[in-house]
Image (cartoon, rainbow, N blue to C red; front, side, top):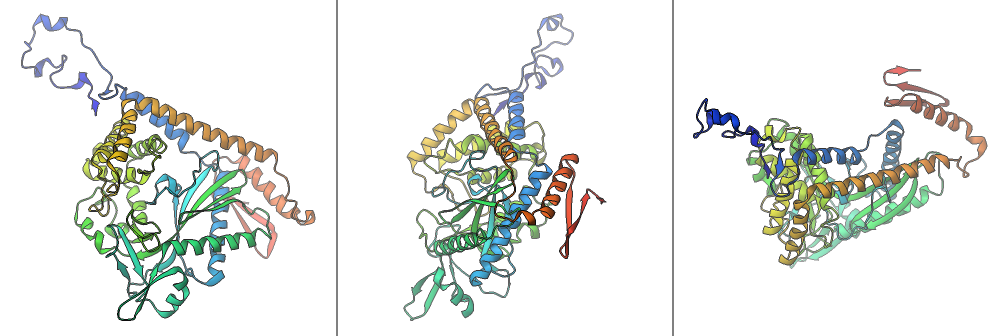
Length: 505
């Protein structure tokens, strides 16, 4: 908690009229020296104003501005990933033909979805990648309200489920039965349970086959596949596009329309987003992620995810609270990483709970980022000491229930060191962000200096593409900050035309 500004309190030395012991017009009152103290954090003694400035500086270095060149590279990488998934679908027709992906800014390690981080390789921004994304790819898309679905939660912890294909048509079962575990009932019927581990194995193998084939026939402008790794049930792909490296954490999921019965009671409560967005936007769908509980069976158990709803809720969160959340995440993400008991998703849940608990006009204060940061640290420490962190959508699910007393207290003590000197830890986070940005800029400069025509293409075939590339680069250089689009007639690629903002030429 922050100590309030003394000069503004009722009953302070400059509020004679409110003081029960002061005498009006007493000449002795005029001899008192009025002190104006800065607003301080009671626990650490840090100045709130200084913490606010440090959070602002961290945000400046952590949230990079995208120029037109970087935007073009992001778009190129996204198109490559989507095209790759289209080829995966054609391999064995397992994926839905008309699929709906959810693309989230930030990798799985950033806590954008509730996944276990124990099995993930450590990637660092600046060293391994420049930008990171999470892509949820439905292996099964259950959007038909007439499609019977069997979520079997009898064998699972709260917020988890098995998925039976027993009520699916024979075509779906035959298509996916090699990715299922089989359970025979006493009555002789066979039940197929959709297996997250087997689906992830199939997905990784299919992506590897497609990428190997694509790289045999490289095309100009195609991203370079720098790394493809399977991290547990996640497939991590790092692409080199121009001077940028993009990390895509691709997660096979099961997609549903509507809302699960186990989270129905959450809709009956009052929430911070009431009146700001519609209930239909919030409950448009949910997912099953390939993650299991500590006591669950990895080969059968999926985790309920409300990532689509969280995208909508984020619209209602103030920028100052989001800045505090990002800064807090940077402070704890490495500190609490060993052993991996706390993930950034726990912090995200606490932030959502704080939005329900605190008045909207308080959370909307632009200069309260320091208060929010300190509050989030206090909340996290409270959760650790009590081993209690309710899932925001299914409050009866305690996401820290599995923690041992020793691990919880170890992390609580580590967090206490942050709370006792938040300013110093913020400075360290700022230096890390600066260092990552320097690594990225150095790589971009080296990439620009070493950019040469691809040796895999016939020089005679390069000229039209080279002219287009040079023209586009010139436009990007001469029109900083403007939106540039290229329109090409597929029947006559020699005549591109450009649009800068709303002007064509």
